[in-house]
Image (tube, rainbow, N blue to C red):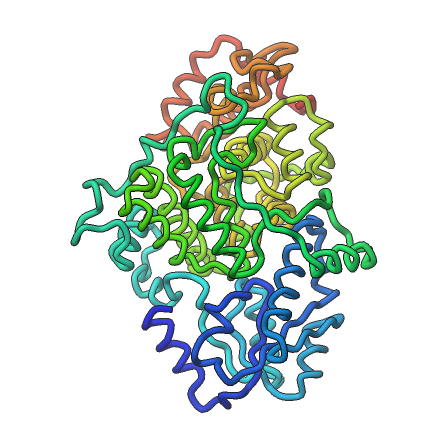
Length: 509
């Protein structure tokens, strides 16, 4: 916890009973919340609300992870915690019998709800969030009124602010960004990267009870049930972090953008879930990776890439969620209004023929997780080309991914993936034809479609869909120096009319 965090908490707690119970949400489960010295004399309140669990159609494994994390914390805290299984949060707080304190929750809707509870006297104080490196107030002071600041500027400021991978005022190695070293295609002919498997948790009696309870609740879920694949306690998260640092981090960088159908994990850390549940603090992960570089155990481009994902991108997304405001998730500057198809919402990978799309949907179905390139360049790319409604897509990502939370997806989906915010987050739409997927994955070799073909039975829906997208949005793309060349290339296509006619209403993906 930074001094800024501590100052904000102390100010919010001025005049508040030091023994007032601490209400902890399901994504605030780590010691960065309940272990703070300001809460040493407080009991902890955990609430499992059936109304919240039933409100949306979540992935079955997402619900398991959330309940497992909450119940494991209850078990860890022993007599210090009280676990309420009620219909609503309000019902549980009324049972507490005295006002509680709570750290600010992680969505606009939840913040408004907590403030209404404070007005009713059920909440005594709302404290700043402590599960991210940079306090929100500090970010807003840095950002000021300018909404055009870039992720790269923020990332460099973060590195300086927290003295990570720095030599005085300059980055280790002389460069801030080593992304050019982290764009390798998957090894030819390989089915896996050949690195040590990720660390897997061992399910216990708590997990078994969660599974039984979920079976009995008859909740509206999507996706397959399965063994728990992600850490949900601080001890598990630290074990997963150490395993990643020792066995996988060094290989992570070069292949972080690559896809292998037989190796969904590649060299990724699988730490997004414990971070988003609040049981692993981002600075703990970042410092462990930096130490591996200092000790000569991991190459710089791998460590820098990992640090950039967490201290850069993840923190950037968190702060932009608040900075852009509540209405951001409904932005639709490209006027895309196609409803998500049933095969998409049902995670029915067997219903589509394109190998990349089929395998990615099966991964979401079976694990509730695929890494960032299938999310952006397969799912997001397809949705952008086929003009799916951005708000509905963001909601789908939030509920269908085990690491999806309300703050995570609007900037990632509405902004980065779908360019629906008019360029507030990203400088160009992230769309490409099948050539990119062919270069960065092994999906295209056995696919019924050919990434080089635009027209006919073997026409790749990504390649043909790309030119349809460029044609529809040519005025926007022509005005952007990063995409103007795509429009010029489209103008030279002799079969453009045939492509557009073919893709009109296409459903054979």
